[in-house]
Length: 252
Image (cartoon, rainbow, N blue to C red):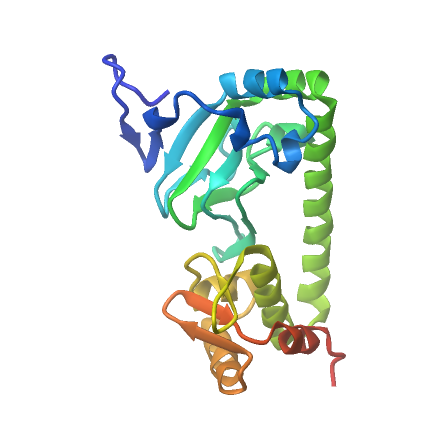
């Protein structure tokens, strides 16, 4: 897909076919939720039809309203899923962690991607042509069940986000977003749970429907209170219990 006639890999818009992974081992996916229950032979057949890709930090894996020609599995890294409002404001919908499917527009009958997916750090993904989705669903019931559970969970999460944006105060929204990211990607350190990818205060603002100024004010206050520790594109949740209590507190 991204090779020249001599077979050498070439980079296109930050996406590089990975020649070092031309022979994929089934252990890469055997324990992931989407592929649990598949036999070793089934796993080999699934991998034989995958294209491994390296995605440079900041490069899009796919873009909103682009034709959904492929679906993907994130093997390594973190992916930011974003949409742009009619007013031109970029909103971060969610972050994708290793082991999750993404770009599965075909699963809900869409011909185009409903959002843009951008590599938050350097990533490795597996890509399959979307035309294979019906074959996978028919041949591997476990894959179908797990994939549609992923869709259901994301729809439920989107519904919860709408409720949060319409009913929760801004400090609750920011606190809850940090708690969720720490639970999803947190790396234990001596100081607490480090959100394990670069995240700026602007990113947090775009996740929670607020402004950079507000996020900066809250993080400064919470750092002084011992709830978090923040630096350049880095946030550590120091006291997740207190932060969660703040997120769940009834409005005064």
